[in-house]
Amino acid sequence: MTQRTTRVFDTMQELCSAVATDIQDVIATDVTARGECHIVLTGGTVGIALLRDIDPSNDAIDWTHVHVWWGDERFVESDSADRNDGQATKALLGRIRIPAENVHRMPAREDGLSLDEAARSYAAELSEFFGADFPRFDLVLLGVGPDAHVASLFPGLPGISVSGQTVIAVRDSPKPPPERISLSLPSINSSRRVWVVASGDDKAEAIHLATTSRDPNVAPVSAVGGSEETCLYVDASAASKSKEFD
Image 1 (cartoon, helix red, strand yellow):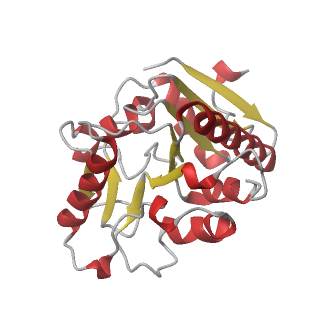
Image 2: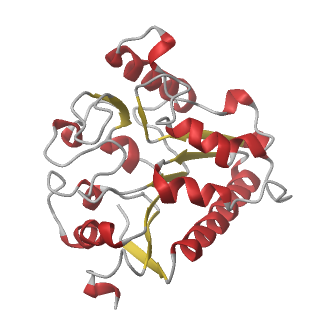
């Protein structure tokens, strides 16, 4: 896992604009160099806001060679406002020319699968595309909660310790709704790049723990990182408790 770097911005809007620009650069570079790019999206206020700043008319990006995945999803109906994929569609995916088969949504409640079956279904899709024990995403975007959770890996819950699965079923999320599907920590950490994005005073303690905690059961965010790059993108409010950023 790479050493973390941190970029601090004065405002949330500056943060979102910078991440959106960097995402477009990564996609353009990877598609040119490798023929495709696999990116994992996140939900949350910042995770969705930064998608709105991506330019759908950017000629440097051929969206037909981009695959979109999710770090976690609420196991609710597909048209629920709680779904990360629905929010991402409104913010970005509905504005770009990306083939439907390149958008890899996690199962919804009406798909006729139990929660465990839904997790296994997404794991099978990952295995089909990557042909390895764990997926090799090019970029994973992660938000972070005030409790320092990432994706649906919550402090004190067993999901953070799962090692032999790519996707887990979550039944007891302390943040509603309780049933979710999430990438496991090894899936996240098998990625080339992991970027954590955070804004606001309520995220300050979590961002502090991201660089100081050594216990993923206390602060899951402290345990994530890419094999080539790990970066915290934060605004000044989220960085306010982290003296190491001064």
